[in-house]
Amino acid sequence: MLLEGKNVLITGASRGIGRATAIECARHGAAVALNWFKDREGMEETLAEIARLGRRAVEVEGDVACPESAERFVSAAAAALGGVDVFVSNAGICPFHAFLDTPIEVFERTMAVNLHGAYYMTQTAARQMRLQGTGGVLIAISSISALVGGGMQAHYTPTKAGVHSLMQSCAIALGPYGIRCNSVMPGTIATDINREDLADPAKRAYMEKRIPLGRLGEPRDVAGCVVFLASDLARYVTGASVLVDGGLFVNLQ
Ligand code: NAP
Image (cartoon, rainbow, N blue to C red):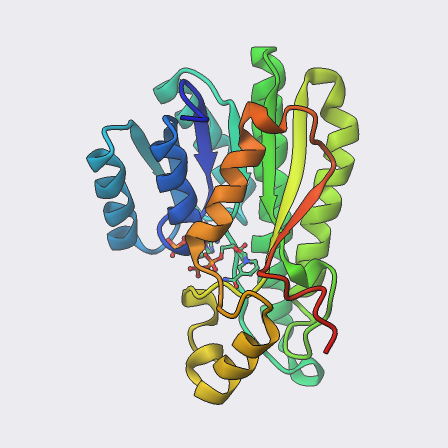
């Protein structure tokens, strides 16, 4: 029960890592507010799972790329739950595309959702935390891609380096308010975002072979790290990043 009495907000919680994070936070005693965009059915499933755990959950639909969504999400969450203690910026897209002919719309949308959306949401949550005056925790779901490249991801990897950098700057800007800011860098986690890419058995086997722990990650693997960073166990951790990749990053060969 690492998050008993905490209110945790998570963007992109209808599926994948966001859903697993919502469930894990609820398992640790938190009340949760969940943003989603297109997957209503997925959101219903997340809510049902949290209800089974006997925890409170509210949902707010909204495209994180629109600045107004941040205001709507944070104010609705604060009103429903009574405040904001932890904010997890998770919503993201990764439309794989070769660099040389990536359409400008794909580049702009990926930046708008992953980087601009994270910025609007983080800033709005931080303003609410400052208003409350009791500190808080901001966590960005960055990626191993903040540290290494991907030939089909030149429009994506800069967004993940960007949110990591955002957390570093926020750690400095918000330290005086008692707000800790960190990023989590997942490796290859099996979710919808890479389902197509990993559908090729040869590609999947190659990835598994490169991971020292011998398997792809599961959304729950990332959620555990988020719970740790959100909790008081990490009370002196800010401006940091944690790789959750089964050892992939350090495996040069
Ligand atoms: P996923 O299963 O595809 O889930 C993505 C989530 O983001 C969904 O809940 C989706 O909501 C939401 N979302 C997408 N666009 C949105 C928008 N404009 N506004 C609000 N919500 C939006 O992917 P995932 O793997 O869990 O990815 C979650 C995060 O982890 C992303 O930031 C991704 O970059 C990062 N990450 C993933 C991996 C990996 O290997 N899976 C590795 C490193 C980092 P709707 O479906 O409701 O639209």
